[in-house]
Length: 237
Image 1 (cartoon, rainbow, N blue to C red):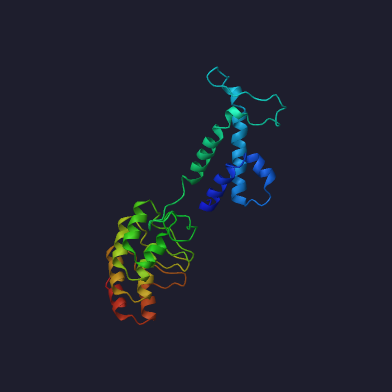
Image 2: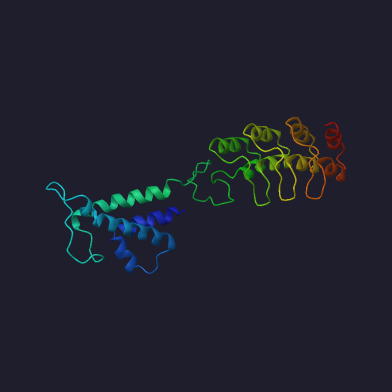
């Protein structure tokens, strides 16, 4: 992914000379700009060989110099094609750039940061129902996890947000998916002492007998923290 500053700088540089010339003359190019210019050099070489594919006609010709192969330069007649090729390349580079749902252009987004193809766990943890729904509609993976291995469903259970839980389940969230500790959303809700989320997850079919990496069930985790109401709910299932 390239930045907006790099995009603008590359376009500005192209107005001053050819990609190959810029690569030879500019020693302080950043890596992103250099990569773009290198791709444009390849496009330039392809244009130089167009005459071999499309024989010249009186209406349109691309006269090539007779210099040895590899030393040819772009004929003046074909220079007008290079900006078109550059625009095509830039459009391809940006075609998959994500758009932040908060109205920004998505350039800040990086893996693990909110706003890229939707950081669903972060949105769920913040309780932003509208954002969670938008990300899901845009194709975010409902069971994607954060660095701790926790999914959006687990984080919504941690925050006791039944609205987000309901929405995630509607989109097929895994009820019994586990984090790095082997804990499900139900276990997390129980360990936090959230009767509402605990009851809701049980009603949706969460497994009350599933154990974490230490062999503890949701009821065990609630009992450890003396969450009696939660224990009672779990025991009723």
